[in-house]
Length: 326
Image (cartoon, rainbow, N blue to C red; front, side, top):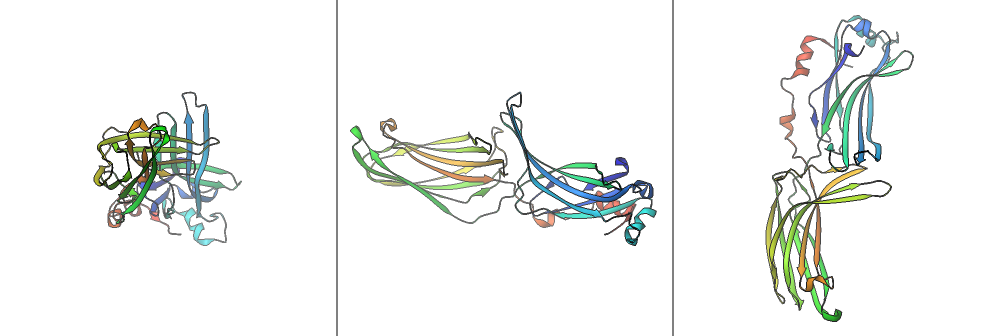
């Protein structure tokens, strides 16, 4: 039966809120559908993670589940339209499914914690005995997309400076303006840092800007893994002045460490731009200033006209088979 009923999709890659277009091909229709009462299209996403070579810890969670009925009771004599399916040799049934806006992106990581967010579209048959059989299963990849943002956001931090014997040495301030929260590979993040040491009697020895990948696993004991991708060191700032520093970070995967962000229920991947201003005295009195800027790196969405189907397998199938539109 499985070889007689197939599912075809117009692509393997999709974005949230995009329509999946497909077609179900049924050969030898009268014989194939003899024991089938209903056909379902089933889309399911799963999050899984494993730890260690022996897979000591493993959890399975459905993050997405949706199905819709493709054929309504084709063995019900009262339904004349569906009865027509049984007298045709080979038929093609097109379908369209609209993905939700907030569906998490796919991911696959094979090192350390093995993390996966997988999606599969299945064709399921319900027999006259009410048994359900999976006839065909196709993997698909969903990439969340980066929204272009023409905004400037600001984050700041200040700290009371302590010197010898914890003596008050004034206040140091760090502020950063940055150019958005969602980016794609190849984009530049523009930073404008303002270091204010007018009320401080100590100077900043070094400023370090780093890009870090943050992986959060929601389990009984939540785990947060931070991996440094790149680092840039800047000269310090003397006390008693205000200094503005402008820098840009290019989001490019030079060392094959980066991956797309995802916002699953169990697995979350995002990035932190960490700005650390190191003070003197080896930070004995916890005088360092730090700012963490969370960002997401998504796929840049293709313009809608590029997603239109002009000439492909699905369109050609409509010329080969009798197309039944429900």
